[in-house]
Length: 334
Image 1: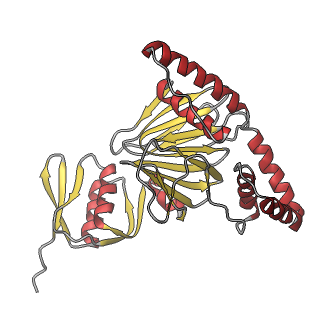
Image 2 (image 1 turned 30 degrees about the vertical axis):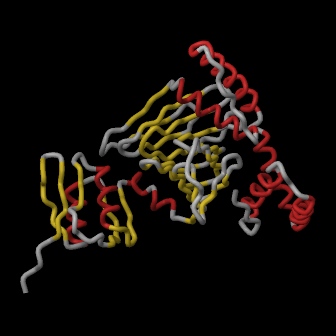
Image 3 (image 1 turned 120 degrees about the vertical axis):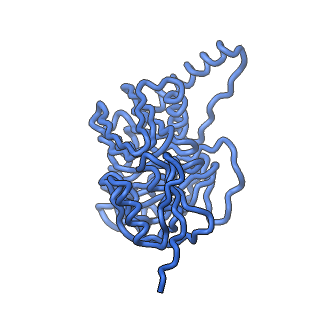
């Protein structure tokens, strides 16, 4: 969990709330918090606002217990064996885990996009999901909670504030809780990337199993990691990277029909371009991974290929009806 009190005052208030509710708070930490409150009357106001917002999450706790009991009873009756209960260090963390079970077992709404297709979904509460190419989500709303599971691909979630119904997005190991914010979740193979455009989210890491964390990585099985605007993390096989600062608007430029790159390797660019074309794009073996910088319009496959051919020495060759391969361009005669 990242705690940085040198941030903007609004962000510091949220960090202090998480720090004081981590379950093991020293007297020195409490004194430090009191000193922070005394620095500025506005600090106290901001902290109280965070407390009030987090208090609004309490109703999900009772709902979680009811749903877990109901689901466990169903499994026991069907399989005639004892099931394992859910154990959570924090009630909010346990609530998010229960949400994942519900959305997986009882999807009430399923939305999907094909390759080279995008879709904007308006939800009952005024929230919106902008679904990228080759993506799918399952949605379940109840009076107590709003839950979405990203099953494949990528989505940007523009969340309408509802203090009585937390908004939760689950994708593999990641579970993201937001109240009035905008963020992206991208499921890329076994990796889950969370990027915040506006507001703040809490990301829970729920790995079933996985390797020991590598140096510079964080394993956070119970406590959330807080992300703010232009923050990004990636979870891979139960391991969470450190928070990095990015330009979130560039990461989600596909919503405006654009891909923007800055010295990005050729193969990474072509793999992403291929998501927006009806045919597969690939790079031939032996072609250097040239860095690509520029803006690509994704509305026209021909325009994308022309951009790449002009940017680096490659030539598109149609290998089949469904596949184009970029080969090294022949040297220009002197």
